[in-house]
Length: 74
Image 1 (cartoon, rainbow, N blue to C red):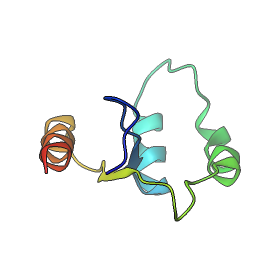
Image 2: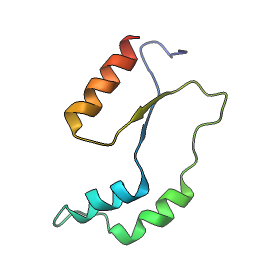
Image 3: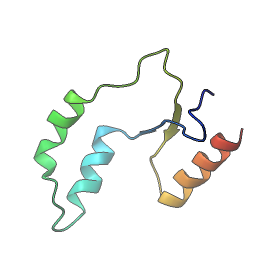
Image 4: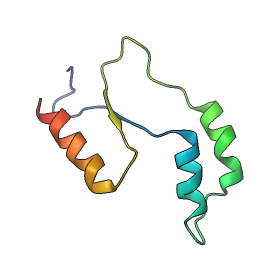
């Protein structure tokens, strides 16, 4: 994995339905869930030649962190 010093680029992958569920479960959150579709449409994913660490970010935060730590140390 290419890195800039100790910097690594990480992409957390989460299905749109899960993002919506998370947003809607947060009472008083500043981000209106109705904006999710436009935000996902505007997202510019990394190019195929960009070296990034992609992590499945579904599930509990502790599980995501464990996947991230395992991938980063590989």
